[in-house]
Length: 213
Image 1 (cartoon, one colour):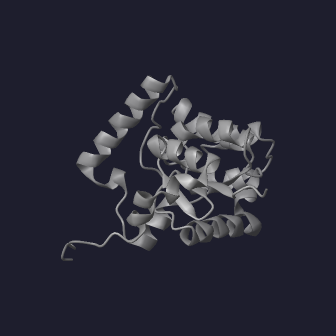
Image 2 (cartoon, rainbow, N blue to C red):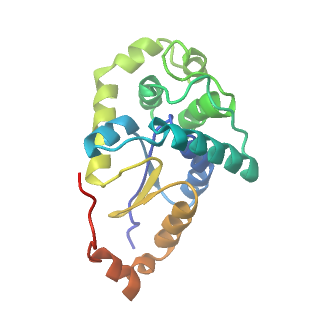
């Protein structure tokens, strides 16, 4: 029986992607998962949304809940020197290294476990060295690397991804690193979870009111 395609969309700017990554690695031991680093800011721009770190009160709450969850889950987490930051160099470096689990590990550990800057290829030089990339500046400037990042972005839009991290299972997207991850794993195990009468009803639930723009 064919396996339902599973993909993980993530950005190194997200502490919640870092928190979900160990769960995704565990899932990869049981299921094939395509890793797709994307520029979250590009998705926000496309959808006309504001990121949680761009709303002052929500920014602090987001940081607090991430730090608290890390402590509760026993995951070491130290915020980088500034946030949000431009993750483009980290995303391209990941792709240049083959988007392997080891590359994802190295970048998340550098930025979120150890609290280092990830906003430039100079800041990421130790990670590049660890990954065996001798000329990281040239590696992230490679047109093939840029093309792959763009392809990941286009795949995210096609999958109706609106946030990171997101697991997609077949044609369904599951955003978030906590309960959404549990639901995604439940659907992988039994697609019928989304086919109960009440779940099917949600697909066509009418909109009762809309805010005026």
